[in-house]
Length: 262
Image (cartoon, rainbow, N blue to C red; front, side, top):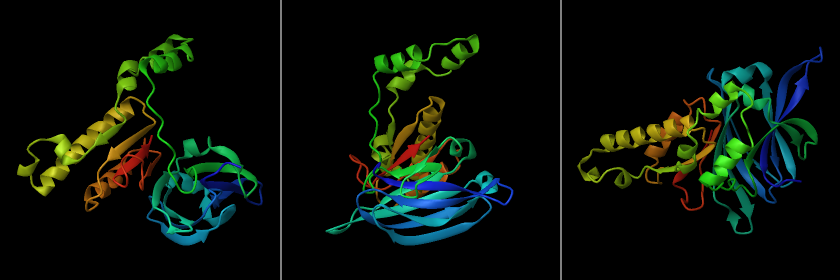
């Protein structure tokens, strides 16, 4: 059984035998008991919250998602902490945007529930975030992107040329928004000017990441008062390309970074 914490959707049929809704499961196979809080939102304004404790190798139903709600921008925001002999562990955060197109591709077996359904990995073990994949070398990336996917038609060749391979391979997949990293004259700036400059750099970075087809990036915003983080998380919700975001502890950045999945 794969270790981790998962969000599962079990199809439910109506009297006509058609799938009309999904029972939503929070599944824990992390090796630890955990405490959690969940905020579920829809673009229609619906907001539901839930808090609880989930033992290891257990699953808990956290509600239902109607099939037609897949078009209403459902988002599940998670906070969780592993329960250890020393108390509770570090808080981990993740937001899952459920998009219809990706949802129907995420078919798999729901552990503990022992049913087929749709599944999202929240954390890979004991509430920790999935490890960051190292950026491939230009040689390795070129081999993977071109040799394993030879263009068979003129259209495919044109599609391959949409991305600048060398630029993507050398793209720095993280951006540090600490103001001293962005300008030497930061002491002359007001708080609002600092925030505006940081958000400009953030948006420029996201535009490049999306254009180059990156799958995962890190936004370093620091801990501080949390103002910059809050603005970034709000802005990320407006990107249709963003599949999810994850706060909490990240190795090398501690609690001052957000991982973004594209």
